Amino acid sequence: MKGRWSKYLLGGLVIAVLAGCSSRPTDRGQQYKDGRLDNALEYVNEPNATGKPVNALDYSNQVAAVQIASSSLYGRNNTTFQAVEQWLRSGADTRNLSQYGISAYQMEGADNFGNVQLTGYYTPVVQARYTRQGEFQYPLYRMPPKRGRLPDRASIYSGALSDNYVIAWTNSLMDNFMMEVQGSGYVDYGDGRPFMFFGYAGKNGHAYRSIGKVLIDRGEVARENMSMQAIRQWADTHSAAEVRELLEQNPSFVFFKPEPFAPVRGASGVPLIAKASVASDRSLIPAGTTLLAEVPELNDKGKFTGKYHMRLMVALDVGGAIKGQHFDMYQGIGTDAGHAAGYYNHYGRVWVLKSAQNGKPLFTAYAPSN
Image (cartoon, rainbow, N blue to C red; front, side, top):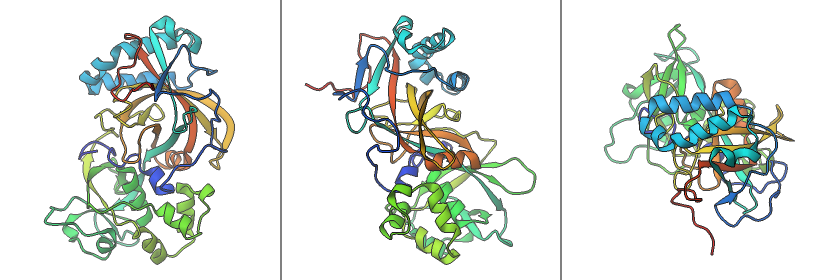
């Protein structure tokens, strides 16, 4: 997100924070159901999926948000939007997609067997004050002028930046860091006023390093147990100095811009509807693309239950860690959304839906194998 756009340069970095790498599907979802897929986007007569989308209303609301916020984006995708809406009203049977002029292209996944990586992100709400006081000792900064290279995280924590750049004082260094990872958030100044949206304003230019991977490498958290919750639990059982030392292992630092009365927007400039929008790799999945996803259901411990639900989602955001066969699903605002987002690093099947045009998808990255 450049300035006013919510989190789009960092929105997909949740997975990078967790472990800095992906894992093959084990207890994390879809297991080689459809045989080998030879194309990044492979046409199928009908998705091999059961059940109906559980979020038809949210999808419709997301499409309406696209229409209001970006007439050009809506115009490029309106035939698909309208066809999918008609299909939903007819009962949303995946066997009938072609009757509504909809072609389905299954994504091959990172393993060529349909396992598409699904992670999650959200918009945090952080408690803060306008001035430094009591427990509110941790600054959030606006973007300083670039006169040479900006200081790294450890230097910033040590006071390398002037307080003139402070835009809020929070009560948690870890909350600040998590908001950096998400790329944006809401700030509650505790004075009864509406929450202030803090949009992404820029970075300090230093390389990103995963603190989740640091904890794994140190033997503090097992790789299979790594999640945002695991990082928070580790922080809750260690001193403030130890938490700071861990965070300083990532020299990259994010700055924010206060934006009153702003909704959460993705890179496309469209307000995001929870669980009906995703961040994607634009080289493969362009903005405005409709996706039908078989999403693994998780329990309250973040473990795969063995069940799935179908969702319709629109690609409206991007993320630095979202490459290829990987989507970051927007989970919403606040603690519950953060809980869900923190656990997601699972695998499901995904089909790109597109109104039929010459029998082929209009994606630049589509390259059938020879």
